[in-house]
Image 1 (spheres, rainbow, N blue to C red):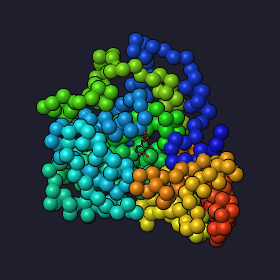
Image 2: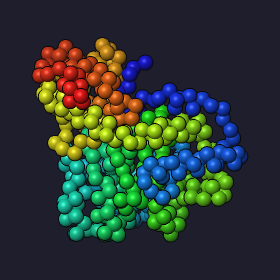
Image 3: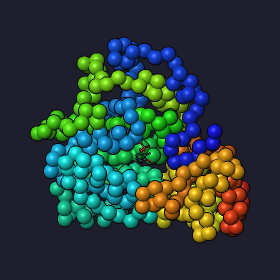
Image 4: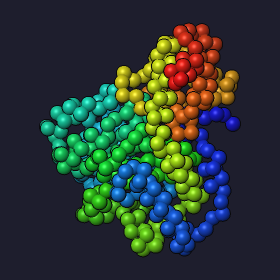
Length: 377
Ligand SMILES: *Cc1c(COP(=O)(O)O)cnc(C)c1O
């Protein structure tokens, strides 16, 4: 098995794997499971500093993005799609599928969205039911200030759907200091569970917008409203994946044990990674606005992305990520989030990267791992 230092899925701690192998109850019939599910959702609300209802849906992170759009969008609704990355751009597809009219605000992929530019756009056009925005857009690693963006949108009466699948639990996020109406998360990034679960945090305003629709939500599996009163009614729309949720619960308990240090650790490891690469002359993709969960390297001249990935796998047994969509071939990515975010793991990855680059004749101007460790000391 490769050591996965990818930008998600991430490595999974043993106690999470063990929790997933516990005996299963019948989650549709056992009242104790409803309590367990509710408590776990309350832990999610607490982690994001909000009283907004949190929900866990059986399905990969993408399900949450689609469910948010499915549940809010009615035919003809104008939706602002904030696009400074591949996932940001992708929201337009979900809006269209559910009959909405996406309008894109496009901003440079090499840096975060500038609030002043977004505000200038909104002054001319602000007739939107909601907007979509990505916290950490993983293919480029850019980090948008979703708290401030949502407050700006709220001043124009626009609701916010924010994708923090690859941000949350590695980058601090305080929903109480935001106007985010639906926050989307996934199990397999910084929370370090295996893939399989979507988490959603839904404001009262968003639930009201779903209830006030003129037309029914054109989805069942992606219908958030069906979850609203699960506890009072003691019914889920479909059978909950008990083992996945047992794993998520263990990962959340791990998170609360580390809560005081986890964000500082991510910030330090990420800064030291960037420092080592910069000193070594290995180019970063972004100009600024780097997320602390992933570092994106612009593939240097004289080597291809596949040569880097395959070299690291074959010679060092370490897997990092390539890229896709408009960034395919241009970027390789080290995921240093969640269980990947430890000094030894990242140092070993940098060592493997250096060896792979040098084998292809690309000069690296310092010892990456040593510079990285020195920076952390
Ligand atoms: C990983 C990720 C998702 C979810 O994608 P999956 O294919 O379900 O893993 C959504 N948004 C962002 C920004 C992500 O990084």
